[in-house]
Length: 191
Image 1: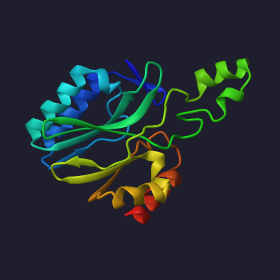
Image 2: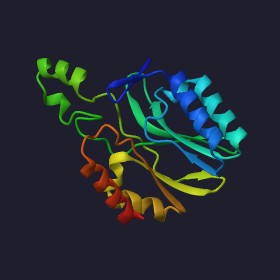
Image 3: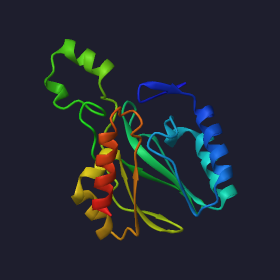
Image 4: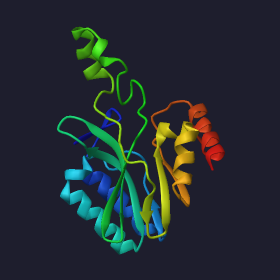
């Protein structure tokens, strides 16, 4: 079982769900949301093989939200794609305060650090790669969730040649529809 947004989802269950959904769709580009594959994908050969097979079977580029390991203890919220016999990765640049990292963590007293490690997000680091992902259908400018609200980041992707802008978000854990409507409004302005 793997943790995802405070809940647990077995990677085999995620693969089964998405395998069934992929059978129903015939498209040139298949996209699944942020965290769709609740596994550290960079070192998971089985999941990478599954992505490759699904891409080949569907004759499509595939982009799934997952987690990538950048060092021994920290991860990035990432998008992994398979296209043209290679895996490509985009790592989230802008992290959500208190969701993916704790601001000024080093200033917290030891007792609060233990609470922050347990209750708040402190397991992610910023990604470094900013360029669009070059897939068979064109250059895709990927951003993940919270990054959508930063116009300069989206503008940089278009200036680097992105033909399509793609935001991977899992907004299901927000109770309010207001947040979902705000994200949609941001997406309209970024387009």
